[in-house]
Image (tube, rainbow, N blue to C red):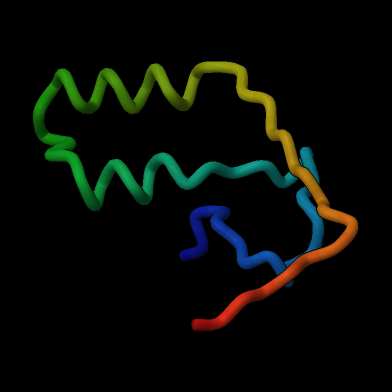
Length: 64
């Protein structure tokens, strides 16, 4: 299941299909059987978030 974390080459974000990486990351790094962590995740999911995407005009890549 894709939790909404997409690669930079994926189609642009659509607000009607908005999902978040929070449930996937919380399940990976937190013990969600802990009521405090489960409440924290619920708070994150209930909050209103703004997504800011910056598209650079040019990209420079350096190798060493």
